[in-house]
Image (cartoon, rainbow, N blue to C red):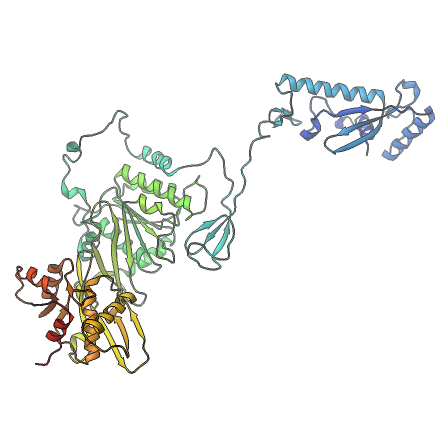
Length: 638
């Protein structure tokens, strides 16, 4: 339908029905692209006669379904109106082509006057160019519907792919996770609209808003404080929260003597290793407060389990702390708002990869969410002096999932270790701002939860070795892990005449090859045509050089088919010349052997002089300079 036809239709419609009359002050919303001034190139082609004009008008009227009689309001195109019809050609920038239309003088003049008025209105608004951001468009009710929004960059929905195993996020899909290398774990996630300048929240700003409503703010003129005045009036008993019981003492040993108020502690470990069990038992001990003067509220928050599931696990572990509060949520703001009225002694969150902070882009567990949530909890802990304990997932490689900055933000990083088919769990400190990282906690997983091991030094020894003196190829080594000494059993098997092969488990392959080569060269053992197998009992990895002498002794015992008498242990490092070298902390290792009832200990000759100054009456120290001397003292009859 052409422009002239539309105007004729509008005028006829308003004449027949006044409800459809269009007021000039209430114009319908127009596409802003039509408001550009069009470039007119008019060319007049007058009609040959008035009859052709009248016939064309009648045709247009009949096509609209209206009569063109004398009573019709259809605009007349006859000569009696003194409006000569002509053809007008112009370029339409919206359509992108030249348009030719038949119009009358009155329509063209009305069109030009409306365009000039709109152009003057734009000049009054201070915009004479083509910038659409300041146009004032209004709807039929006079409400501004188009103006400042035009030209403003709109937020777009960002689609990310998140690994369901480790929480790694990527902007595009891959067939496998680039962090944990698991295939088929990348899931599509749309975090919503991102704002460029508003709506973003940082963990620091959020924690400030939360603690501002909780605590009295310090005066603005507070400045640097002299070191001598910082710890004045603070009792050493109030510096740490003591953990009572055997289990609490074992956890407190790893933490450096107890839980420091206002600290942020992160516990990492493989799935199913016992992180949630450890945190739940620790929370119950803190809530009971046997050495703190009474009970106090402790909030345990889980983003992975419901309250009922946590309660069932607590019943199985026989935890009955009355001031232990359970809550299931993943919103940091909601967690801290609910914990605020309780004034808790500690807060436990399981886990940091499941919580999120509103206003921060990314899904829960993403780099941005983990960083900002941890920053918010750190600021909260420092401001309120309430310790916060976090559980963290680990990737396939054993690292904590999320950004590396997570381990830099927290105060303490603890790792739980353990073999899949073993009931023992080791808790070691990787980072500790308030204590040493040399401590190690030893636990045993049972139906009632984690139990502290009473004598961890012997837990890696097999029962067969303690009851038998007729098994060749067995030797006992003493290794240090943290501040504790552990006894481990080395097993060796030499098979003569078999194809040459060497299989090791728990011992570094390069270290085992070196020891075997030194035995052949320096000790004269004919091991060239023997298949040699080495194993460390209980799945322990022998990583320090203090176990070299026990590995050599086990190989000699199997090759010579001479069992090592019970009650003998070996401590020392082997050099390429076959000499024996002293290792650090010899007194701690030998004292552990004496405590466990061992009668003899084979050590380097240099260590014998050092150990002679100690009062070790229940154990005999035998010093050896090299491997030949060790073989002569241990593997001789009578």
